[in-house]
Figure 1 (cartoon, rainbow, N blue to C red):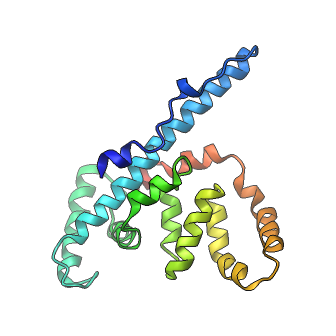
Figure 2: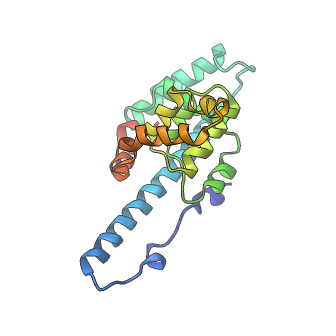
Figure 3: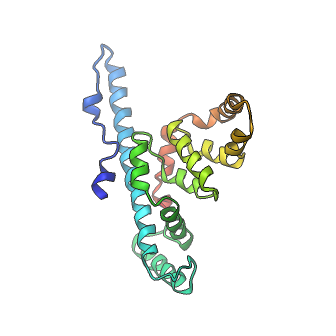
Length: 204
């Protein structure tokens, strides 16, 4: 499983480089491609790590209850020990996010492979965890990956019940057009959005 995940999205910037007569343009392309590749690699590892954290917690003796007395004690102790060792970011609520992530996306490896270069970030998955309806959650996940929605676009679409409005309407293109117009500002400056997602103090 590990090798399958770690090989996702590793497109070489050397293989994709095309020299032009404009050295500044070429330099910008090299730098931006390397930044994108670096952030993508971090994202892949971060999503994998949080899924594995959820998996490991779930493997403990929880007696079938996510918040059983034993489970609460395990997570409480983990939070204390890991915070002492690694600093903030390992509070109990974050561990429950990881546990829910594992339970709601049990086939995350296959999901990431299907997404190929358009991998969702951990912030995307945090937003998706708000959606209780599995059909809606799967749809939002697919659309966010294929349409390269920013986290703010995804959050806005979840909050506005975009999935259900698309199901009910006979004119989906109009609903989609309205959505794109309203979320256009959220789609700008995606690289800065990526940087924010990987803040050291917000890794869970």
